[in-house]
Length: 235
Figure 1 (cartoon, rainbow, N blue to C red):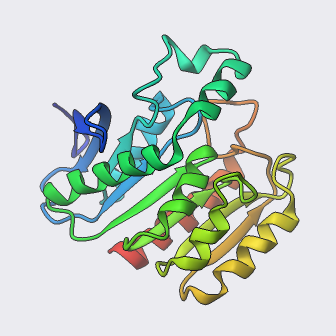
Figure 2: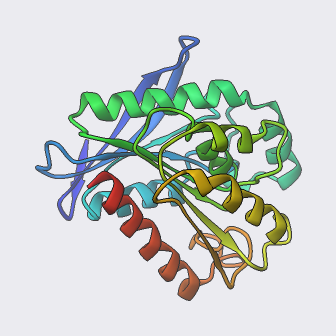
Figure 3: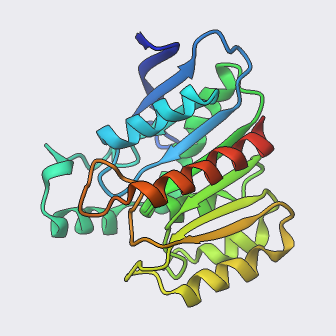
């Protein structure tokens, strides 16, 4: 357990639905007993230093955050330096249903800590997981450049769920066509409070640990949308 600038940090072990131990990093605003909770679904790197920094950012903004290691059953020695083909192969092996169960375990931990409401924030692969999670009875979902056309078919979950969803995408993302983003926008038409915003950036532009992708100006605008959305729906 640690603490910095009014934030309490801890490393906990969740129990997956299959009984596996699932590492989880938790950042909480000190003294905020009933702060709302946000489960973070990571990129293909898993529970990275950047994902931890996102949890701290949310805690600084007043939310209780739990970043879940969905690759607990398939660890790599140093995923942040692993070759992309190795990371992609690991992602292909991931059980999406199992990963959703791990996120649910993270949300349950936040509720046990006193979270009044829970939502989900996901990046890249985690954005697709967040779309899938939006079919659950949670309060809000933020999907940051998650693939919309995917074998798991997140649009089915999007059409089935009820909570508001915020979509964050880059106009210059070569892997996610703007036509797919428009499909997401149409699928969210039945969900009051949902928004989709497209920024003048490429893929993974929020990740300030990866300068080849990061766009500080566009990221600042996107974070303002994310924080405002979470505050309206979880605050």
